[in-house]
Image (tube, rainbow, N blue to C red; front, side):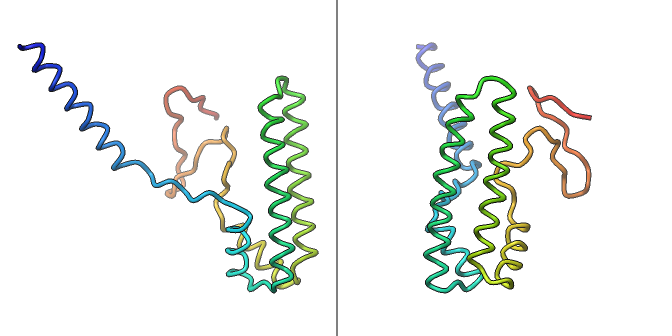
Length: 148
C-alpha cells in the first residue's frame, strides 16, 4: 500500500515539473521562409512588385545554398574541410549582398544594411562569451569552456 502511494506521489511530482517547464519554455519562433523574408523586407523598404519577385528568388537560392552547406558541414570530418566550408559560407554571404545591391535602389540598400545590422545574429559566434546588457561577460555554464 505504501509503495502504491509513493508511486502516485512520484508520478504527480513529475507531471507538475513537466507542466512548470512547459509554462516557462520559450515560444517557438516562426520558421523563416523566403516568403516571410520577402514580406518583411517589402514592409521595411516598400519594394516594387518586380523587386519582390527578384528578392524572393534570391532568398530561395540562399535557402537552398544554406541547406547544402549544412549537409556538407555535417559530413565534414577534418578541420581543413570545416574551414573551407566557413570560407564558402562567407563568400556566399558576400555574393548575396552583391545581388541584393543590384536589386535594390541605393536608398533601399542603405536601409537594408541598417535593418540587417539591427537584427540579432541567428547563429552568432558560439565560442565567444556572451555580453550582458550591463557590459559584463557571462561565465561559461557547466560543460562549456570559458575563454579568456
